[in-house]
Image (cartoon, rainbow, N blue to C red; front, side, top):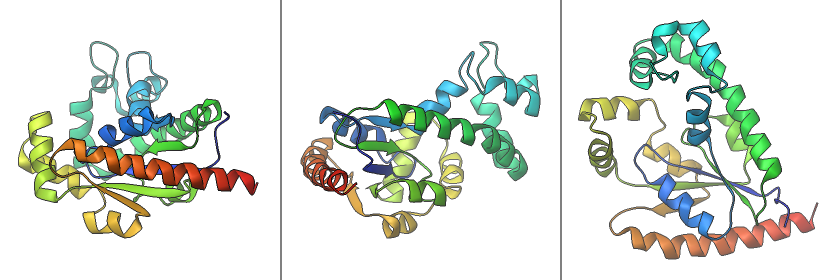
Length: 208
């Protein structure tokens, strides 16, 4: 089966469980195109973005393995909004090109784009057929990220401050999965949405 033009933008705040939800959709045969995975690939040793990052920011931002020094870059972009814009100017076009390449090759009933900053990006919201938000309370979000990453509460809150608020995400959502408590509760929610998305994708392809 060739890839349908119907696509879902899966988003949520840091630590909300986007990857877990995406993996459940993958079990249904939906191709997953994850912008974070692509960004990590672009900034890994030998990645397409490394030369441009070195030229823009200096060799100190490339670690001994030849990858982006993420910790150092995180400090820089939080301290300097201009640096954040420069980094985005390098990465965003490359990420977009990789997303388009992967989408053209994908096979499945519909596409899932995992985009952490989808709500903050008008262009992404226009490119997907439907927005799915993985939602958790902010206090739970902070605890999960601290446990997973070892970051301090202040560091987690600083990251969250650069993202859309919970209210903004929910206001933009076509669908919401609440990721609270037992992860097993996600399975029937994803099953139900898979049925919906498969139907919508089939209908959209019939009207092309």
